[in-house]
Length: 480
Image (cartoon, rainbow, N blue to C red; front, side, top):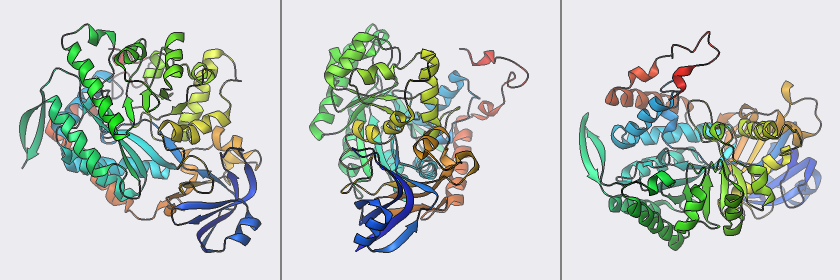
């Protein structure tokens, strides 16, 4: 007997046949899908202890967010969009200003946001930028992991080392007193190893750990400490390979893929984020090495230069979509980022034929699972896979009339249309309400830890609305 039968909905399976079943059903036993097909057929063969009526809804694989940042959820509006002030907040928060309680509260807030938007699996870098990681000691990563577990979503947490020179100044707090200490590369690497040993593939395989190093550009190779930076990147990549971990880097652009190739850190278990401004040779390098790419269409980096997604796809490179959330101008709503992705590339080519909606939906489901090395477990609705499933309420004015649901969920839906979410066969969101967590408690903890951080670092000046917010065609204060 099945544990759960979801029936009477429109199944968008994203399986090998890309089936769309108008009156479809999914049967679940334990944490696995055991059947997908027409409602009457699945119900006949798999009587269940619980039946979920998905009438008027799309039954889909849970969405996957392939790139985001832990910590950002509590500082996302600081600086009012001015990058220099935003990075000041990030730098302070992720080195000297945060406590374990901060990381736990932020993890819960971000995971709850993802849950409510139908994101069942997400990548989170434990810090900001491409190198400001909170890896001076394991307690911060531990707090983040515990926070995610409390919500119940699936997470790939990327931890790693910061850019040389080392040592770097970090701080912890005891009774409101800041205590600084110098942290070496070796200490950071030891922290990463501890977090891998403690958390990777634990808690019913809901937590994974990935490793990262800072992306190297020509300016870093021309600076003092370049040899250390290269040696450290290779060392972290070897550790990732030895442990079978995903290796990722943030902020690739204009020439950095060539440098990564020369260093020897590319390959099928390497995931490069942003990847903007790539030329034909760098696209070819990604294809030759089977390196994976995550495109963040809503990020500022994609304004400054274009990620050549269609060219990468045509070269055979697997590309996923990431939110790069949360930040001053973007959330974890992957429906928003799918729509932004289509508009972004169609505008570039002045041609609406690029990136059909089915392709971008793949980039948030089965292709995203593939770049994470998890496509045998998640990313589609197929027997044997994990029961990570979302129901999208199609009976809403902006999603009517009731035809061509595969178009409507991609072009018109948003995260607030997600009605029900299951992760590993467990219902975590029902009728848009979290089942196992007190949402008000999560919000209150997030507010409390944000206020404490602001006071510790003296960041009240970053909460002032910019002078050119109103009545101007351009806010020149955003230009560095």
